[in-house]
Amino acid sequence: YGSDKDRLAAKAEKEFLSIVPFAEDQNKIKFQSKFDFIVNGEKVDIKSSKLNQGSKRFSAKRWAFSVKKQEFCADFIVCFAFLDELYRLFLIPGELIRNYQTISISQNGKSKWLDYEISKDELAEFFNAK
Picture 1 (cartoon, rainbow, N blue to C red):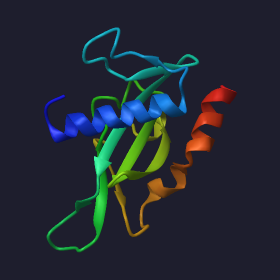
Picture 2: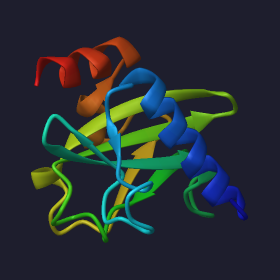
Picture 3: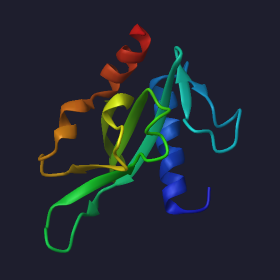
Picture 4: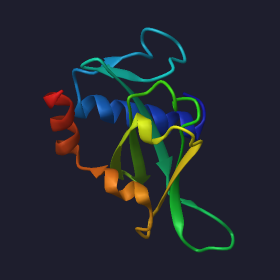
């Protein structure tokens, strides 16, 4: 993996597999697959972001996840919001991202997407229960 973004994406996908080890990796089957994993018949795409300065006008930092390519094909988006080696997880149903190109989550806690924050254990339980 060449760029920093590619390495971060690979790190998130590897971490997802450690949480949901029975997920079927679609990137091993097809180069540039439209989604990353199939888990119990559900199409799951993994997104990753480092904390960035959102705007020059505002001091708040945010994570930004591009979803425009997956908006019509993924059943779920799992977002890894990295803060150094630690991260926060968000599990977002695919139907909620229709018509979005980017999901933006502020570090200071003002985002509708915060309702979808989930722990590693909850993520594992969610896919185990399917």
